[in-house]
Length: 72
Image (cartoon, rainbow, N blue to C red; front, side):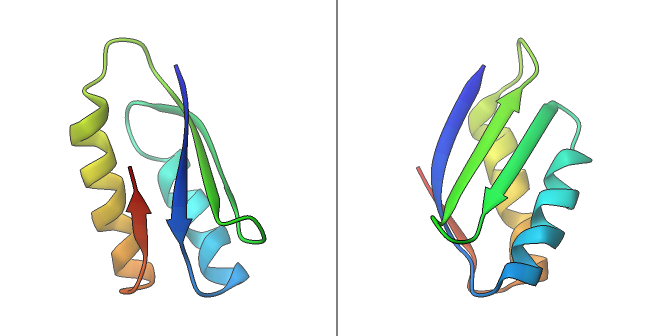
């Protein structure tokens, strides 16, 4: 399943780091963070709890940039 979210990230380097962390998250097939458009696109594995996974991803991204937010 593919989902796209608005993401608030302050710099391109942070966006790259977030993309790497998200792609290593269990339940994520592929993810990309576009700094210019402030968009996060995630392809999820089948049968995952997306809401729980997004909360986990948000926590991981906030460790990289504490101002980061993923808007659902």
